[in-house]
Image 1: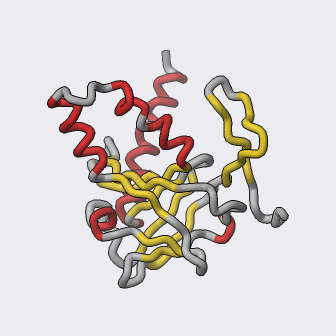
Image 2 (image 1 turned 90 degrees about the vertical axis):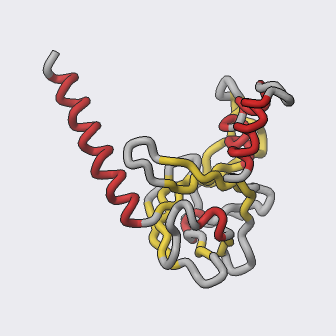
Length: 172
């Protein structure tokens, strides 16, 4: 049964055809939550997922503009698209194997507990500097987890880039 504050979008296969009966939450807005001593963070109630079958995968990434780490969280079907390169690389080539090891050490599945929290181990929290607070930023079909100060810095730098690009479009 759907709650009126739960928004969903249809999951799609390549080619943008909806899969019957499969939906995922719509992650919008941003929410600041505390990080407790065990690394648990409250999942925003507006993002509640209808099904416990929706698996979430957390990946530590580096923001190209600020060189700061943050955590990208994807539903499993999007994670498969995100990691497609791993499936196409050789299983034994040294460079591909090194990339796969580096990549895999920065990924883990996350689950919600009965109280609507998820736990991030120190290996994921430390690179993103998630100590006492975490900012969960909705990105429509995925969300990001940031140190609040790092996110503010990233957004300021992104706004400068967007403003510059807009200015360049207006002045050919």
